[in-house]
Amino acid sequence: MSAALDDIRGWVFDVDGCLVRTTRAGGKGGVPFPGAIEIMELLHDRGDEVVVCTNASELPPAVYAAHLRDIGLPVRDDAFVTAGSAAADHVLAHHPGARVLVVGAEGVTEPMRERGITLAAPGEELADVVVVGAASSYETPVLNAAALAVAAGAAFYTTVDSPWFSGGIRRSLAVSAAIAASIEFATGRKAEVAGKPSAVLAESLLRRLGVDGAASAVVGDAPAEIRLAHHMGGTGILLLSGATTQSDADDLTGPTRPEIVLDDIAVLHRRLAPQTTRQGA
Image (cartoon, rainbow, N blue to C red):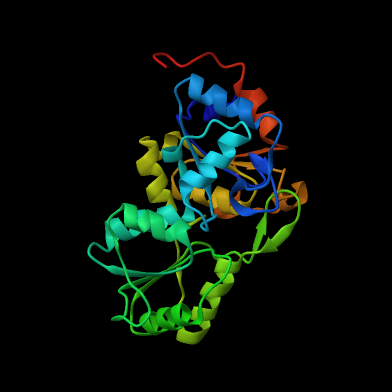
């Protein structure tokens, strides 16, 4: 085993294209990749900290976590982080007392309410913060209120800014990114990203893991996970089971270049399995 793997105490796993093969964000409707259940059990047994993280934001974290448990993955509600819950963490820490307009669904509004954040609505005074997340549909009055608030200077966040979602089967449009882009077009202001691969998310994940950045790793199927790992000061492990091919991986440079490239999660499990249980775990 490499020294890099041996030193890791806190793990962040992507869902789609990494732990689960699916066409829907957050692992919905998917099946675990071979080795996914086994690696989660192994890391829990040896006492490592494990967080599962997705850029999905349409549903609350507990709903996604419950689905993963239903298909055999041992994931606690409080160990599942979405781009929506990371946005709520960031608003609480950096915009105390702000009124927040959510352009999205309960996957963003519920984490906001759980943290005691005041939600704004169309027709009220302009919001201090606008957060765009995923939803099955969007209402014109909400979009208009969001654009007016952003144009007036409200802090502006989007859960994702990548145009496509890939879960290991085929890609689909990242609708929340498209909605955020429409507000950017109208206002001339760029949204700050709260999901992968942002520093916003890195801060939230390190707080949850409770480990030094150098002892962390992010495992995923896209360059965004590698960039996130480097924001955290940790190790980027790229899997070729989703959005990235070997040819793509060979071309990665700078902050998107992974320390480790593997075919899939089963290979990582085999690399880790020979290690003995951590002392005191």
